[in-house]
Length: 461
Image (cartoon, rainbow, N blue to C red):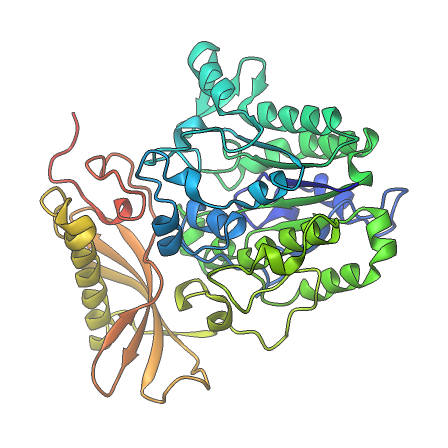
């Protein structure tokens, strides 16, 4: 009998630093009776491992649960249309269609993955869905807020409501097959240090899962969508990597290790190889296939990463970011040298990126928001870097990373561009990251992708 359970508890890759008690329990040097509660696949010290595919939570989660990149996810199941999100073939639906009981729970009603600036689900996406309860709880129960998000909710933290739901779900269906997706934001979203407040709780929680027998027939994935996106830490080189290399740990039950020792060898091997959320998507399909309820071929590939694969098989050490749908901006394989931030070329590249941002907002949704947002101008370039040349690129093309500030919003951004020195063309790769908070600046913009580039001409209040 097979269970599959997903825990997405932290937004950050520095799990060993933030979970000093939980991590040794996950990765013991001398295994206790229950060895390696989770197998480490990637964290801040294992570079070029699990790499995000885009900015923010939604696109990275959609890559995991649908195999789509952001543009194709928006087309297949638009979050801006009532019932649009219901149209996608989420991985939990594939489990549900084959007899698994499903659950989805997430805290932070205000910034919920499928509801922040989106229409949400018209129908419950899973058999057990916690959002109605948490919406009522946030409205009716006494609560405190930290960094703008509900923290204490009644006698528990908001995150504990989600974890308790997961614990009860796995206990109720201990002798049946289930798929659970439990995600928390409130103790880790806005403060790189806040996660450590849940360390002892998470260690105890994992021990509860062991004691009630959950781990005996359950594959558990404990992972994050991305690292810290804002604040002083993010502007550093380690912050650049922290955002792009979220943590992931995978637990395989003992009998699966015994029957398929090659799975364990693959996970250990893949720790230091380039892997993506698309690979996790295919891993979940692989687990469903080995349950005997589906053929892998019938489950299909990850639509937007034909070359991606299950993490239970060895990943090629020769993989490149372009092979697996990762834009230069999110790729951690580049090596950079610092260059002058005041040079003529750096200033030119900065102005071209700002022009790109203005055009993006002006043309967004057929110009719907063009009159609402003030045009930006380049104020200064804080840092500039040039990547070591890639053997696959033409000699005349160079890749640069810029950290710059715009006016009038004092916005701090990071962009990766390719500059062709022969024809003078400049191409922005991936999206442009916003490195400082913009709460209150872009309330006139209701799209999560364009909001970070908008400075409203008229402010509320």
